[in-house]
Length: 150
Image 1 (cartoon, rainbow, N blue to C red):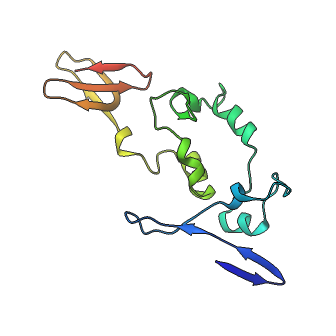
Image 2: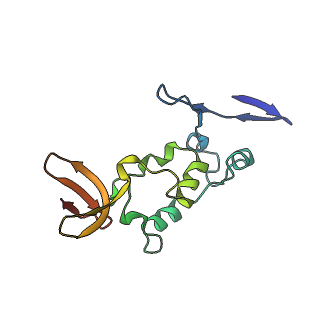
């Protein structure tokens, strides 16, 4: 959509799929001309999402840091662990929903990563998500990334 207000042309782009008709915004930050400043974002985007542009390098350092330990479970661009979901696709989502997922990580959980408490007949119990439910075995991945077969 293109609109003009107070002599300023504003452009927004959304997308949807056949499976999900919800319109989602496409961040235009990736399409700026090479001569445009990359460390600034328009006030229209900030007002719409409530989120400004972050510092990619600082975010990467935090992701792999001992302070927040995201990479202990998650993977991004081929780096990190495979215990939790791969987060490489976050660049295709709007900033406000990504921020919500960071602030409230349990708000929306991928069904493949729902955790279960499992107690074996010998009384030993552990928590993890089910990697495979086979005919004679249940494969569960714990938070430490180790697989347990029941």
